[in-house]
Image (cartoon, rainbow, N blue to C red; front, side, top):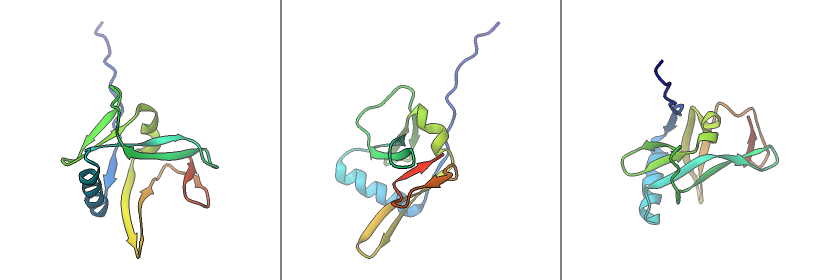
Length: 116
């Protein structure tokens, strides 16, 4: 009997044009092309997004290559951010990345934490 190879589940993430342009700008400013995206426990609803410039790579990470930058996603975050749409909005002096996540069932009033 052949051994069954473990394959990592694939995560689908969509980036809007404005998110891509902003990420390219930020990686050029920071001098790194690696971004860590995921979720962690915290906040009033149980989970918060991780969105940081990557400092460590784990062998189990899924790496999405966008040419000028890569997005690293840890194993535990995959089911929570599958089908996420990352957008970037600028209104007046305010600018922010927007996480449009179909997996979120509730979020807090401040918009930082969510429930799955």
